[in-house]
Amino acid sequence: MNDFVGMILGGTLGEEEQELATIKDVAERAGVTVTTVSRVLNNRGYISEETREKVHRVMREMQYQPNEIARSLSRKKTMILGVIIPTIAHPFFAELTNYIEKYASQRGYKILLCNSRMNQGKEKEYIDMLTSNRVDGMFMSSHTLEVDEYKKLKQPIITFDRRIADIPYVSSDNEQGGIYAAELLLKKECRKIAHITGNLGLDLLSNQRTDGFVRTLRAQGVELIVIELGPDVFESEGYEQVITSLLEQNPDIDGIFTSSDILAMNVIKVCMGKGIDIPGRIKLIGYDDIEMASLVTPALTTIKQPIEEMAERAVHLLDGLIRGEEIKNENVLPVTLVERGST
Image 1 (tube, rainbow, N blue to C red):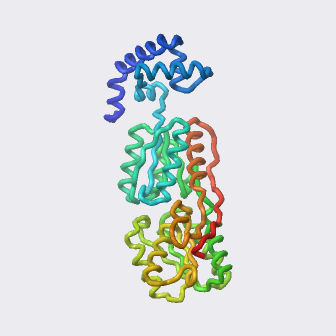
Image 2: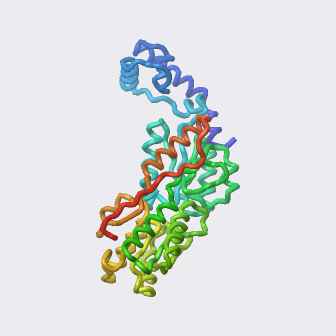
Image 3: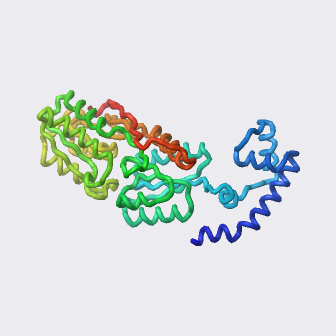
C-alpha cells in the first residue's frame, strides 16, 4: 500500500465519525434528515430548491466543510482528473487546459496539471503519481512513451492527437487543415512554398497536416520545401534561427505554412527584421487560431482548431468512461480556414 493511500486509510475512521457528527448538527439546525444533507452534498436525488438553499445556508453559518478524502473513499471516486501536457507555456495547451478545467468543473471534477516537457522520464513519473493518487481518469496530450505504457494503465484515458490501440481520442481534422492551407496559397498564386512543421518522427495525428498540405501542392507541381523541427518542438528558442536560415537560403519563397500559430508569429518577427513584407512578398498561414492570432500585425491567417469544443468533447468522453458507458473511440472535429491580413 502506498503512503498516500495508507495515510488516508490510517485516519479514515476518526474523520468519518467527526464528519457524521457535523452532518447531524447541520441536519438538526436545518430541520432535515442526515440523508437530505448528504443528498445536497453529493447533488443526488430530488431536493427542492428551498431545502437545498436552506441546507447550504446552515452549512455556511456553521462553517461546515465536508471531508473530501473520506467522501472519496465512501463513493470510490476522488473526483480528480489528471492532465498531462507538453508545456503550459505554449498558448494552444494553455487554452486547451483552461477549457478542460472549465468543463470538468461543471461536472464536479478538479484537475491535476502535469508538464512533461516532452521528457519520457517525466511523463512516466507523472503517470505513476496520478495513478498512486487514484485520479478517476487522465487526459494525455504528451506522447513520448511507448504504446504499451498507455495500454497497461487501468484508469480511463482520453488522448489528444494520438491513436493508441482502443483508447478513445479527440483530434481536429488535421489532414483537411493542411489541404485548406495548400488551396489558399495556390489561390494566392504562390509558386515556391515552405512548410515548417514539428517533429514528424513522433506518432501524432497532427502529422496529417503535413500530409494533406504536401500531397495537394505536389499534385499541382508546386516547388515545396519542408522544414522539420527537432525534438524540442514546443521550445521556441531556436525558431528564429531556423526561419532566418530558410529565408536566406531561399530568397524567392512566396508562401509559408507553419504547423502552429506560434511558429507563424516567429516568421512575422523575422520578416519584419529583414524588411520582408507580409503579405506583399510572402503569404503566411498558421495553425490553431489561438487568441493571439488576431492581435499580431498583420493579423494571422490560420486554420482554426475548435479548441473549446475539443476540450468539452474530451471531458464528456472521460466522464462517460468513468461512469462505465460505451463511447466512440474516434472523435475528429472539423477545422475552418480563418483568412486575415497575412495572406
